Length: 380
Image (tube, rainbow, N blue to C red; front, side, top):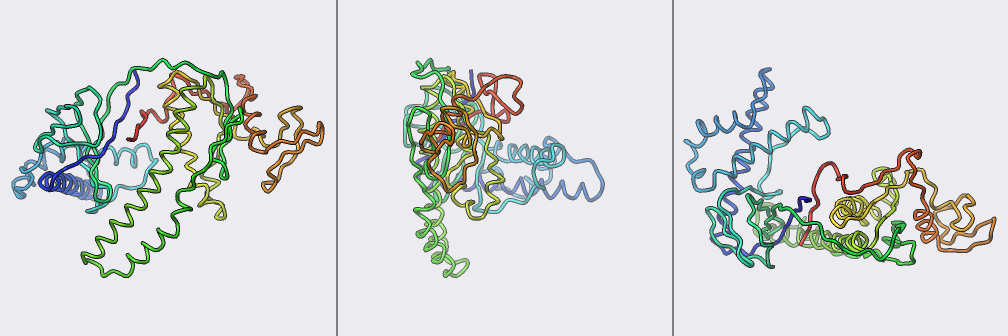
């Protein structure tokens, strides 16, 4: 059974918000203390301490000095040190991240809770915090641990659980999906999903809020209020984009047996400064990421076409190949005279994409494939 993540917003009272802030502060302090200890060990040429070594030293040297460590759950600093150990492995061993940095108050505040956790309807019972309401009904499970995080002035809770694979009937065997900027997705059956362009539509408002923040005196209460307003607007843009992609990917994974998409070079497209903003506003990587785990959920198959497959240059009728400028939105075949929308022509070619093993670069993502070994995230 696939492992699924669930995330929803909490409705804490003032006392609970204070406890949340204390837990996040202790987790941040433990992480920064552990990071400083690791850097000192590296400077002296000593072996890097493990998470267990750091926790033993934390209990012996730090907790006796700072009594407020005992006001929160012990799980928060323990998990912070485990996260630090993982960060060093990603930097030192796997070499795919930057050097770990010190955490700052108000930036990605979060903490971990484990132990006696209960769920009843739309309420959680958390250690040291008690019963707390959420904005929706919760799944009938008992999570072993949860992560609580803050975005702007709102608190969210997330946890993982096993999901039974739903048996959804498929209405279509195979479909090609061409993703773009003008239209987010054009399917080979003629379905067109418009791009909501959340950032572009909110760009002027974001600029106004940013100017308003720049005028405020640093450290003042009005500056904090302006920061919250700007962060809320950025969060709204992200939520609009994710909502569109979630609805599209769920529809595709539930109703199509096979889905063929392009292997886009998103990092290379972002280097084009004329298109970078529009490309980032589409969420191409998020679209592929969600498809990869949702096709596993619903028993469908994702096929990634080779990056150099000329889907926009081939005629979907006679397979004649000709050059196509980006400015041309209608494909006019020089061989058979076919006139068709450029994106629709590309999506039909993707549907006809051969999936033989001899094609290098092709990738089928079925039940056994996941994105970097991670389970999917279902955002509520």
